[in-house]
Length: 324
Image (cartoon, rainbow, N blue to C red):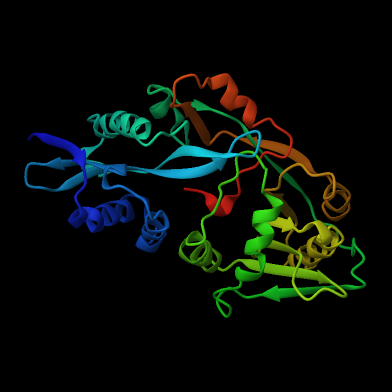
């Protein structure tokens, strides 16, 4: 049977969503939300392999994401996602061919470089991607309060009861990350279409904080709280919200301790403002690395060494809520 490789047609978007759902198991909303959050998306960003009868057996998509370079200026990054092939059609070279087409189309879209997340790194190494270590931290959990909260009002939000609980911290995120290398510059449409459902599925814990005398929140924290494990996924503050960071981390520590959590994972950039609070609340902190991120130059003149260096820059960070 012949296989046809091409960009999908408008009527085939649902077929791609069904394929990704079948292969990955995630609900279709996860894939549809990221597609819809890119208003200028072209159909040729989704490439697929079809059998003679029109059955889609493999698909690859790339997002064009404005991502901050070392000087803080956004540039176009090609985010490879949703690389999926039906079980019966694997090991026949379909995704390799589609990735080759995606590389050409990323050049067509003026992408400077590409990033992907995977557990099968060798599959992409053949096509020029290289693994870059990404850092996170793990530590224990203090059983004693670790930060003073006098004069600071901390509010806990439930994303299921407050679907738009992201609105108070949308501006905080923008200001806190305005020059941070590797961060995705979230367009306004991205918040209700991507951030909101990710806060709800599974439900995250969200806190905002403000100091006395201020009417709006000046800091926020997003976390995953399980029965035995927890993780800080996102945190940020306005210039007038530095004193709120300790109170937010204390709110997270206290709730995690109440659930019997013994160890926590912190997905946070290096920041001297946070360090004293982190050391007090999470004893025995250790820096660990993950090898699930890969990068590749796309534009002429961009080197792999330059891309690797970006991940070592102080404060550089990719937030988990922006995973693809």
